[in-house]
Length: 213
Image (cartoon, rainbow, N blue to C red):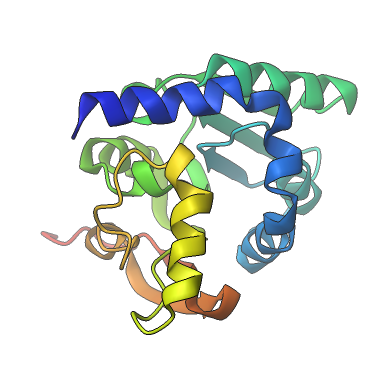
């Protein structure tokens, strides 16, 4: 991975944290659909991986109630600060935030589900996925969504996707199938195209029995 590209993407998240909600407002309907697909219930524990400013936290908390727990993970201090302010403003005392790169995060729970919402770089990192999946229950549900390349003939859409995602994506490797590594961790993964083929929504679950059992 190009270290200058990595630094540039991280700087974009840090620099634009205060404007992130507004800049990504058009994606909010997909955030709602992503969380809506997650089959969790009251009392469950959910990981919000790459939680950013916490735009999914309230929706997740609505699903798992005050008896459940949401753990958000993000490596941007500015993003985590805004997520913490959001949680404090709403008195979400069952929301825990972890400021760390996902592969290094000390995750304090074993969760029933995990959400990856607009987290392309995390989904391309095997160490990050290994850490997350090491803190999930057998049978835990996984939902992931984000941008992807549209069919090649949709040239204008792909130019638009490049301009929208380039400031925040460290590498476009795997952008044709961002869920490719999830296939190794998740059972019965289903993937739907959204946003005219410029996005996806994937759902599956952790195997209930170890592969080598």
